[in-house]
Amino acid sequence: MLSRAIVSASRTALQQRTATTLAAGFPKVASRLPTKYGGVYTVTLIPGDGIGTEITDSVKEIFEHVNAPIEWEQYNVSGETAMGESLLVEAMESLKRNKVGLKGILFTPMDQQSHPSWNVAMRKQLDIYASVVVFKTIPGVPARHKDVDFAIIRENTEGEYSGLEHQSFPGVVESLKVSTRAKAERIARFAFDFALKNNRKKVTCVHKANIMKLGDGLFLNTFRNVAETYYKHSGIAYNDMIVDNTSMQLVARPQQFDVMVMPNLYGAIVSNIGAALVGGPGVVPGCNVGREYALFEPGCRHVAKDLMGTNRANPAAMILSGTMLLRHLGLDSMANTIANSTFNVLQSGVAKTSDMGGSATTSDFTNAVIKNL
Image (cartoon, rainbow, N blue to C red; front, side, top):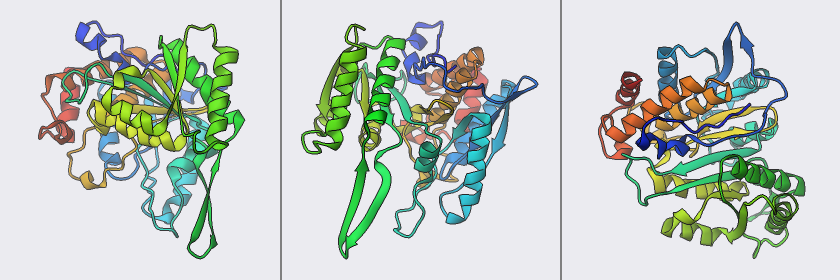
């Protein structure tokens, strides 16, 4: 069961920032439990490109320090070259066996002759349909607004990310946006269930139905139907907002949002805005879930190639994603310990990485978390 991923801290300051680790009181995700032998869980690890190796090494070091019952099946898949496709297939088979994984971001080249996004391929082939990220201001982390606390529920498997495009005539390209009622209803119900389980008060549907009347119109009308049919008397308020207005409202007054549900592309854009509001991609953890599998990765999907190999990346997002993984496995106490320590380091400022205005290294931050355990 993917249990609540909010840290139940004893200190008031910690209680104020617990939702950052994701209040994810989801129903049972997998039809069978993650792979476990002799009290040890086998977890698929895909470090990813860019800073992936450095920040997943932080997680491995911390987990080893607390003696977490995790055995990693590591696959060093890279999107830098198509030669890594066979390894990607192996990693996918590992995820199918283990049901749970921790992942960095795989690079997606923009060249027309290159391979499609392997990040998207994994989510589609495994039907990991819901991306969940909570954005909350954290004491000690510079932010543009106070009292920010909202969740983005993003449909992961269709929309503009369907990857169906062709050149119908030289100089004319057609890209297909695929929208289905079944998947729109599934993600809408997921958003309302998330709100109910985490004491949220409102769900906002983000769309562009004024222009894409059929595609986004289907998403919006399905959302409204789900709200009226299943959640009318649940106490959860609901509304909708056009995506461009949403972007402006997030920057101007993010406190008005609680739970937001949206198609794939809008989720990618709005998630980046959300990360900028609370301190950047280095402090925002996330997860992707489906009926069978759960895959944990930083909530803001950046490869950060400019920081690769410099030991300057902020590993907090990956560490907190790791604590969410521990909660999914029922290791709540261990997850609390690591998350509390991470928040203490962020609040105290003893190891501020460059994204937070400091000069601490990835290793410094990791060691500070271990010291505070």
